[in-house]
Length: 169
Image 1 (cartoon, rainbow, N blue to C red):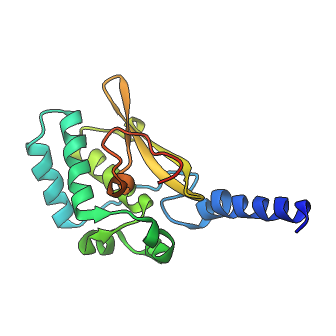
Image 2: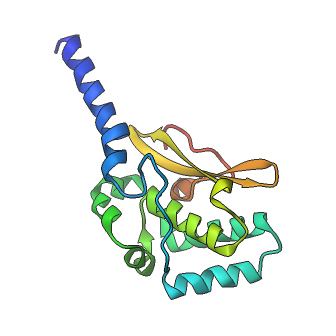
């Protein structure tokens, strides 16, 4: 195989993964997806429950992370196989539990954090990185003067609350 062909294939792959996918997959785009006007009632009840048991932003963030990572999990195996679920409505993802892609887990965490009143959109940065040759999304959340890495999807691989995701899992 000649080197020009290899370079072309790598370029096409990078364009598809880092540009095209962000243009067509919901919640992965270059712009932040707006939060819904109405959320499932069971989600609102969970947010209210966690809020009552949290003294501050940090506690609410941690409790939300724990809740989301118990109800949902990430995983390489399903990341591509279940990409079609990216187009499902929030209520469908919320009600089913189990596997959720990184974008959905982050979107739900954003819903929790902002709906709680503890956080604003300015307190949440949506970040993208390269994991296992695929695009991956995680959050940075501001608590006080520091930013905390949040990657609920990668918890299944041992990544802990506050740890930045690696390039390979």
